[in-house]
Length: 508
Ligand code: XMP
Image (cartoon, rainbow, N blue to C red):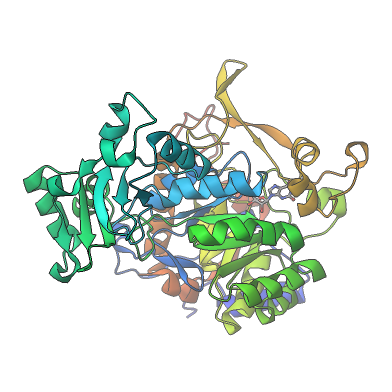
């Protein structure tokens, strides 16, 4: 008796290849299997690149209507990652990254210090220029020793901004502080701050210089467990990524992003298997060898191989599946996404690089399918567009609340931004001669992104439960694919209802 109907994954995709068939999400479903795991118990931790872990395998797209600091903060707090788009100057983009990186700290190892001889006015101006979001500054003297601390209160109640920090600060004698040899961890720091009712706890070296600093609001979040699901770096700060272009654009952005300790950059192009991308990747890896670099987009195994040899730490797969993409219609190229993800992942596995499936996720089940096909994460544009955290206003259109969502290769984005034109290799093309590869439109206003992510994670967990996969690796190993017929597709979606009532995870 046949054990199962679906072919093992390799046989399935080999068979499809023999028939010259490439498949999209709605062409396939995964076969269920014996399960000893409940959806709530599956482990969905994964990787975006070799060194960048994810607590949930969802990444927000580097698009100007999707990811700026609000989305990146929300995604990292939910365990995922946001990639700040590049329709911004290098300075603006770095400011967005800084807002994410400065949002949450454990022990701040290198707090930004000010001198006792600086005026309040100078400090506030520097704060503005450097995009610092905080108001807590340790004050040091000419020998580099801590002499006091400036806090939000000191700034708020300062009547004269020409006063020196030394006059306005809380002086050293009034501070509660600990020695580095005390080895105070976050929990102990919390207790000390609670007891002393102090919102800042400096950690001093024995020569009186500052080793680090705890800030109460962050410490409280960490200790209360609120941050246990956050995606954070080894210093307790939220993780964030940024899109970069090629050649000079990439290097100009890295000059600003690397000092902020950006976690990962994404060379973001419509066709990554090209000389300029590969040269840029090599140069970045030479100059910044420890920087994690994800490269995209591609859709065939030889492209993955070339990028792997050039040093990629992660590969983004997807040429034309996106909801706003017209590349396949305009240029006549591209591989339907499930097939692209499978073959690219197979090649990437040989180089020990994770693949991110980028574009085309419509239903939450598509995430399970993409990851079953071999992806370690998915990038979401449309699914997250329209949430509160996306840039842009809520508009009223024919009685419905909507937000704008557009392709980075849409005519609007290309006219307005050189980086959009460069993504589609038309950097110097005049406005009237542009050939767009994306469209602009509206999506339903969706409220907080947390609700959307909750449904995506819920769908993935459910799918893994049906497949009997305890973790992402098992999902990739166990997934068995079935190809749908037209009748199968119709049966797979809701049918035979006069009107479908809105559901939190289903739209038609
Ligand atoms: P979804 O389906 O989530 O796809 O909306 C988002 C992804 O689509 C890519 N992207 C584009 N592709 N023309 C394209 O061909 C465009 O104008 C365009 N803008 C974005 C991108 O990879 C994104 O993550």
